[in-house]
Length: 140
Length: 277
Length: 150
Image (cartoon, rainbow over all chains, first blue to last red; front, side):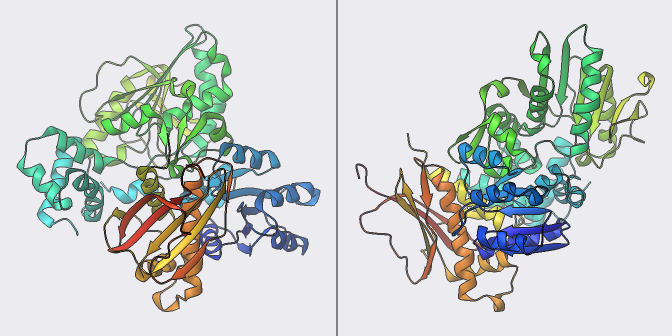
């Protein structure tokens, strides 16, 4: 799986990249806003998965989602918004614009694994779902 | 500060005696982190002070509070894809078919924690089996050892971290309302499930027969004789044609001779051997 | 009835710490009453509700947070990294607090500064303050609001 992380916070990009690598991503690129993300795709590197923050300068996440869905050659890219925007209205807007899934910050890394599994990314299913947290806690 | 060694052993013994759950030798830090909030609530210094108080008093309330704090774990929505896909595509259609004359469906989530599992079933039924709203009696029953968890399940309120776990965003917006920093299941969905406290390791009350028993990721905590006893009791709790579902990494094979595995979709369910087709 | 309660602020901050600072349960954010520290991050909320969310902590706590978020060792941490890490923390805290107050409203970019607690613009009033202790270091979250009727 090839991924692109779009967030204006370097710390958040670092965290998300780390999680994606754990989830089995072979390649993770980063962009600091929507414009950089578009430039990345236009250079030919079409990812399988894009994680998109909402509030970013230059081009925000919702605008990026719209831009991604407008281009037929980018239609197969899976889009997950990862943001503090938590109003229902906002989530509905994001899903309506074409985001496939939505993660509200703060999130645990397992949440990303869960969402990736829901979206059918196979490596992520291998990481999650075996009750790892519970088995860490209790051992009979 | 870490819990003292003999306090820790005391707690381990207590948990084993009262709940049949085995707390690993290396889980001192867990005892500390789970008991520190109780220390705070009671105005005691730290986790050690809580254990002191527990040993010194015969308060069942404090004992219950400590036991619950130690035996509660995270739970997720739609935990593991395959079983829920199997439920949606194979098991539930079969159960609905089987019960088309009685128009009744009974599901028991036997370690329901804060309710995510049984509410996931409720959402699944709502989405995929809307016909059950017409004249069917659907009983979704969640039980847990912890009275605190049962209370939370009835409330149906979850934190951001909790709704991020396994819940599709489309279901979040459809079935929840935001309440301050939290998310609450809408009333019609909450009304679909009922909850009660049951200690699986103790004798069970009369509950009637279930078409589906969810016994997921809870057996791992018990010692072997208890595991066997619980599985046998669960198999006796099934209506004809009913199924038991265990957790992703669990098996009943070798534990319960009454039960045999049945492949439904990509998931394995269990049903009484005599009944398998 | 305001949703901007001390309980809500506490819960929000504890969740954020648990989720983003990889504490694996061993270093929880606990209630505390230590003196406020030397790093201050602020973020502004403007729109239907106007105010500022501040995160103060000690240099050590800021360092721990930075190491955790970036996966760095102590030697690798620079002030720029601290600004980024603590800025993101106040961004997430602010974003969640924005969910408690009247909307619609927008979040500013965060600012992070060193030195004793920089108070927000003088006309704002303290609406909530919650003090925590994390790894025995002080962490304080405060929410400042425009006075009622403004």
